[in-house]
Amino acid sequence: MDSFSPALLALADESERQIRPVFDRIDAVCRANTAKVMAAFAKNRVSETDFIATTGYGYNDRGRDKLDALCADLFGAEDALVRPQFVSGTHAIAAGLYGILRPGDTLLAATDTPYDTILPVIAGDSGGSLKEYGIAFAKTAMLEPDGTYNEANHLARLERDLQQYRPKVVHIQRSRGYALRPSLTVAQIGNMAALVKRLLPEAIVFVDNCYGEFVEEKEPLEVGADILCGSLIKNPGGGLAPTGGYIAGKAELVELAACRLAVPGLGREAGSYAYGYRLFYQGFFMAPHVVAQALKTAVFAAALLQNAGFSVNPGPFDFRTDIIQAVSLGSREKLLAFLKGIQAGAPVDSFVTPTPTAMPGYDDEVAMAAGAFVQGASIELSADGPMRPPFTAFLQGGLTYESGRLGILRAVSEMGVL
Image (cartoon, rainbow, N blue to C red; front, side, top):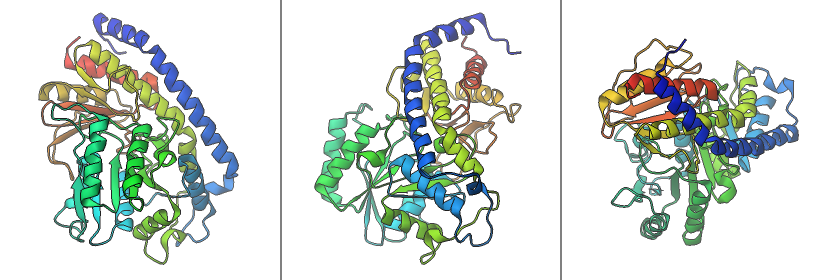
């Protein structure tokens, strides 16, 4: 039985009272997205026989192909590629970029520096990066000098860079990653896509959709994006998918990505999965509800920690377009204590103490708290933070609000501030 201080419990109850209207809005979006998911399952006539395992080349794999069609309908796409062979969201994004770009092309990151793990793909000096293939890279500054975000100014800078670099692909990262800039709403992505298409009609709007799926009622493809990618061990896997990623968008772009995942000539026609597809189908089914649980956990964390005197981004009443909650804790000691508390609130490996370590693809040492049923599944309650000022914890996930709430209480208690 957990023993929290009376002051912490009282502040938690008051914080929860304050955010009840936010929970109501989250539930409304969940209902709308659940209706969309149910309609897609019915349209595609999903059957028990679609769950069976396949082996070898996987030719004529009905369960795999129907999963693609289901995903396409959920994201408003012409086509989709859902594969357990994607090892991460970064892998899916890389397959999309390698599939579309050719030597001499330019990739413009419209939302400034991309997430840490994708940088070696774009600008690394080894391993066959886009840079090594002669693909130029540029980025548009997103924030103002004082660190605030002004959409009109950002769009003006993007317009200038589109005219200067004339990129083939415009990369938009929906979520904040390890940055304190705001995540982008679907409407804001639509504004960026409209600008790109007005100036460069042939340019491809490419969205990293990680952490954003099912948070709003619309997805980026419905407002002008051409292709989007993500991980199945984040939102769309519903906490059940054991691995994998997806790419969805225009059919010709999805096929190019399939040729990079497999080989030209085979593309999407091959690829088996010996464990069967039930957990992927069931994950899509559960995704709207599980995402709602993660959002409630994030909102509770924002309210409680803001009331405790910490800087949070987004705030508890801000409009959300992804599941990530950033909390600036001010010191290495408080960050590590917070992560220790999150780990203690996990169902798996609760006895482990997170420690900072060098991580592939990251510039700073990173400490990660993640006691998950699926390794690295950030739709499950987890938090991580780079060891650099302002020592920010990036919190995400929560399969159930009740367990997520408990994990947040443990994290705050571990810091000793209440």
